[in-house]
Image 1 (cartoon, rainbow, N blue to C red):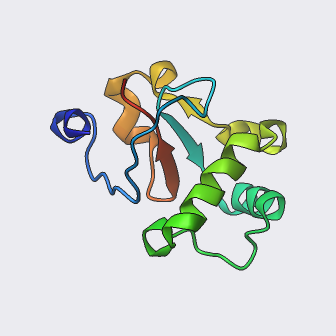
Image 2 (cartoon, rainbow, N blue to C red):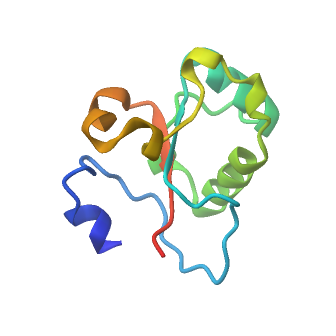
Image 3 (spheres, rainbow, N blue to C red):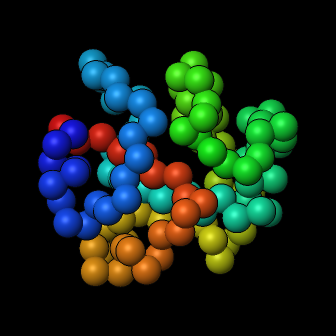
Length: 113
């Protein structure tokens, strides 16, 4: 976790939950960004039954709900997301472009091994 805070590419990081994991829950553990624009939030919230929760402010969510949301994101059918705002990997962006691409309404998740 300390590596993330020391890395100059990770600025304005808010940690909403920390938990040691014994095994990977995602097939791909690279950090990702999911753009939660209004249309994409609507698609995701319909899928995850999150329509009541807007705007997206996970820092106010209880821990159990964060876990539920992460599970919904993991199972979400990404073909429903607008192609121009589809999720992208940090590897695809390259670190130099990262800050320009991310906005306040994105969710970031990842794991360091």
